[in-house]
Length: 235
Image 1 (tube, rainbow, N blue to C red):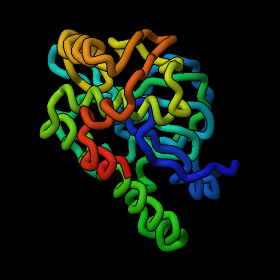
Image 2: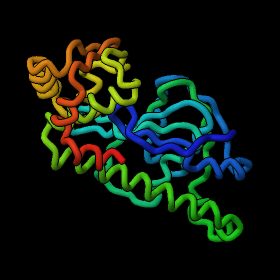
Image 3: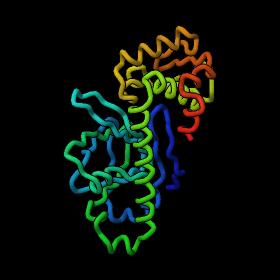
Image 4: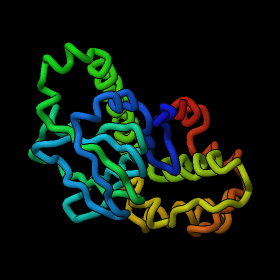
């Protein structure tokens, strides 16, 4: 499998794929299995970490009230659940669900503590460090968004990103509802609706459903998204 290395904001949340494809060389140490769509993978599994061969998995965080925030979309050629074996917290609460039919390779946790394994495969150790750094950067960016940016700015950024990712068309299918976007951003739906209403009244956007999003004034939307600051953070 040849997977392009990708890590970017995609449809308003971080998408990562192909950054650990080098681990295909040691799949003989893993057990492969097929998982159906909407299958829940045990987060923080005490004995295993995983490598995604096919499909897509979403990583979500859950609030005490049960509200879900989608943190990351994981694509083929990516390790996941390895962080829970490197850094553990009693207060971590996240979930892993398949977004489509997936093929997953399950590695034993012991590999991460096997010095002989990494002596024999130093390139895998380097790759693991590299991918952990990418994920740390993604989480930092999301903390910045949620802690330092107003809800209106975060919503505008997401809408602008969707517009860019869909060919900068005036009207396109965003593939997510307003409720989905609120969940992704970790904001209350009523707060998102107020922002959408304000943008609509200003003539910046039009219709917003799962099948249709109208961006009527992308320049104004870019200003609402933070202008140059937004562009810098999206690099």
